[in-house]
Every structure is written in C-alpha cells, then in structure tokens.
Image 1 (tube, one colour):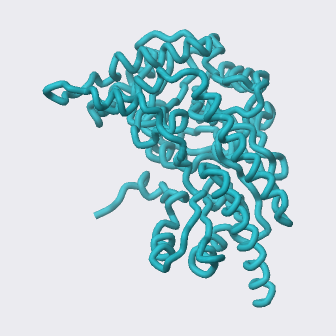
Image 2: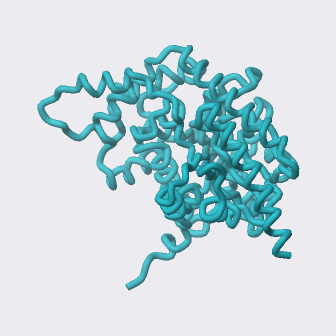
Image 3: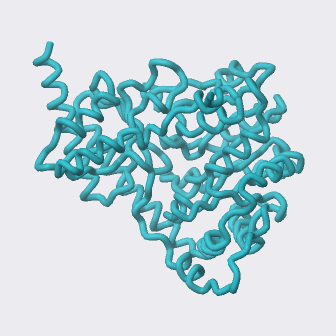
Length: 402
C-alpha cells in the first residue's frame, strides 16, 4: 500500500513538533512557558456563550453549505464598517481560516502550478498548496531586512507561465510585517496586470500597532474584484480559536462555484459555532481597542527583552502577535530540544517555534525563532528571562565541547 505523493510532500506542524518532548518535560516536573502556538489567552466575549446557551431547536440540523445567513449578514456588516460592500453570495463560511485556505488552493491550483508567497510564512500554507498539487515560489526575506517583501521587481521576477496566485498575510504571521496603502496597491496592481489570484490572509487585521495603518484590507480596491480572495476568521480577532469558524470572501463567481463543490466534503460548518460566531461580530469598537492595546504592551515587553540579549537580531513587529528573531545559536531546532530536555531554571523552561519550517528556501531560518506573545506580561517577562539564560548556558556548553 502507498501514501499519496501530495501527503508525503506535506510536513508536520513545527508548532506542535516538540509536543512529545514537552510532555516528558512536564512529567519531569518542569513548568513550560508556551510561546510556540498562537493561542490567545484573552477572554472570549461572553456573547458567544450566551448565543450558544440560548440555542433551543429540537433538532440540531445541517446548516446551508454556504453558511448560516445570520453569520453572513454579521460579516457583511463588519466589512461595511471597513468601507467594503459585499453581497451575501460573496461570502462562504468555512471551518476556520484553515479550511478557507485549503478550499481556495484546491479550487485554483493544478499539479505543478505555482503560488508566490513571501517567506518566512505560516508553515500550514505548505500543506494547503501541496495538498492541491501546487508549488510554492518563495519570495525570500530575512531578519537583516526586517522581513519586508513589498518589492515590485522581486515579486515580478518570480512570475512564470505557471503562476496562479500571490498569497500574503497582512499583518504577517510570523513576522508582524504590515503593508502600507501604497504597498497594498502595488501588489494588487501586479495581480491584476498578470491575471493572478491575490489571496490575502487578513485574520490579524485588527492588530495593527501603528494607527497610520488603520484597519487594512485589500477589499477596498474595487478594481481587483475578480482577482481578490480574502481569508478571514474569528479565531484570533475574538480569541475564539476553538470555534473553528472562518470564511472565504471573493466576488469572483466562478471561484465561488468551485469552492462550493469542495464544500461537499464537509456538508456544512457546525451550526452552533456559526451561531456563536455571528454574536461575536456584535462586540463594540472598544473590544478591538482593548485587545490591540494588550497585545501592544506584550509586544513591547518581548521586543525590549530580546534586544537586551547579546547577539539577537529583531525588528519591532507592527502587527499580529508574533515576533520573528534570529538567535545567537547554531540551530534553533536543536536549541529548543535542549531547552526541554536539559535546561531548567527554578524548574522552568520555555518553548518557541523554530524558524526553518517557516521558509521554503533550504538552509534559511536555521537560527531563527517565532515567538507568540500570547501570555500575560509577567509570564512573558519570565519567559524572556528563561530564553536569555538558556542562550547563555547553551553557548557556554558548546564552547566547552569545542
């Protein structure tokens, strides 16, 4: 028996790769500060739970495959506030942003066709593209340039006869890079000129720490309606990762029809979660402000502490709740395992996501890490202290071995 080529091309999640080592560390009595997974710890708005508790239909039935009308209308209202007018059939509800991305890749890619993605990027993009038989053409960036990728010549150089799409995350995961209006317009123009899909993962849209960026969305550019695919989700914005509700937004009717065909594989998104998600969009503007300010404080703590560690290269992220940094270690993957197996300070250690799996280019990101600043301030301070001590001890041991 054989496993498919596409399955074998996919890699395990780097965010969860070290789970077995973490389990053993816990069993040994160590406390671990988890900075490896983007799981927000802010409270989910209570309106979600209120909506679920009030559900009282006698039979829990399938919802419509495109999504619950109540939720679709809630999303339309949210985008109207951003200046983006949507029709109900422009929105397809999905099981989280992940299914939105997978369905999109399945709908636009043929074997060996290409997607241009700035690297480092969210590693699950590899899974979605490879599951559809596609190929990633990486637009390389690195810590020395602050991971900025909005370069017209470099993007256009990657376009070939096999290119089907450009895929970006704005604000960025794992880098926190945010595109300004002119950069967004430039990338939109490239997609339009070359008849490419522009897939914009905007799940961190509300977390932009410089007010000059506003609340960015490619949806404001009305002249790219046929090209544009927006991926959105309630997971990060409302601290509701367990709800697994997202959506694909596109005015391209042919693409919407293709997406619906693949929806047959899951029939419908969970009814109760859609009901709760619709309620989340009722939160007032103060909720977004409070959430952003909390993450801004956490970012400042992490970046300040990282800059005090000798040899670390880091630029202040302008959005999302991640920071990518280069550490003065030979291999962040090896260093992470050492932190779990051999290091502890007062019975505590720390986890991050090693950087190499965030790159397509071989040999890139080996000394880099992604840190998710999703813990409260005092825990982040302690985690950064552990990281600094771990780096110092790890380097000392390596020097002794030499």
